[in-house]
Image (tube, rainbow, N blue to C red; front, side, top):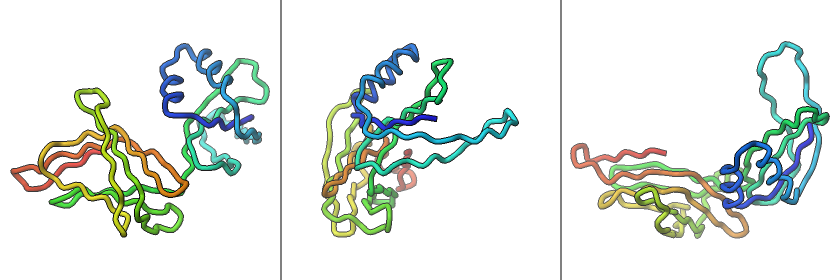
Length: 186
């Protein structure tokens, strides 16, 4: 199987996923400039069952990538692709009865990342409305008090030194008056 890693922006990823039919997606991808190309030999178990496999990837710099997989002998023009993110950052979250906590840590060793910038991109009535930025404290935390309005976070971007990562959506409900707790859906 031949593989290619293409740097890709959030806008390009969205544009790609709005294309139809599949042949237009492949044409879109092939217009991008690959950063790395490599090949792997797949094992044929010969049992016609579905299997999964881990495929080694070359080292890539921090960023978002589209990984394109093509068969070496492409007689039917088949392909597959997926998005991957290369980062050393992890974003943890939990809720207490008074606040919602986000913690930025190094994914390799769990060390807190103080002074990291965390930006929440908020959704209101199905429209991306605005953003709110926070800076982590000495323990890598951003603390959001519960109460007031609920927040629908479309995605989060974390920046720390030369590293940047994007994380998915979160819904933070205001404090529930009946049980004085909160519900968090991620």
